[in-house]
Image (tube, rainbow, N blue to C red; front, side):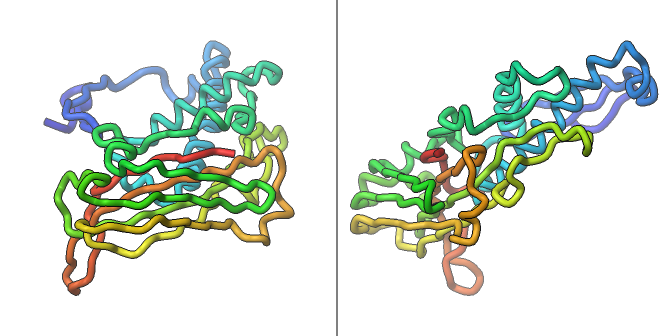
Length: 260
């Protein structure tokens, strides 16, 4: 069941087959906003707003591949941002920065799927490299024999490979604005994608080298506070209404190959 009974709300969420119950009520908004007793809570709220803003932008760097996730990425990325924020021991409480550039390596290999992670579906040694100075990346995909190298869980007739390159900046608390702002706005939450052609699921594909670039026009904005995120996905499809292949919702998986 879902809905409300008295002061209890019942709801479900993606990635769980259970019904969640939560009680309503608590302190009033006015009390939380003005009471000295809630000063610490207000600081936590301010910092959490920065975490959710960073996580939202981080999701954009995946170039839309989060649509293939089989669980809710948002709370996971929010928690990831909070862990990064906690490493700022120099700023005062309520204004701690999110210095992802110092810990960007912790996102390497981040999977968008739990039931069928990327490496269990595409069973070849994909190699991704990032060139920070040029805002480019390359992905080398070895020869693919779909009989042994691709786990087509739903036995769909087509698949394609997608590579994305995104950029995200550190975030700092801006006293003048009274909130969190990206250190480098022009390279915050941007991405590009290279989408391969649909190919039959029973196939042998030659080795591929996929090149991708964020564009030379963004080079002047690159600083050490910017991190580049290279991601990849395999997506499965079927014949659509027009007779052409089209994607099947949630049929596929992806991961972060590398962060630099």
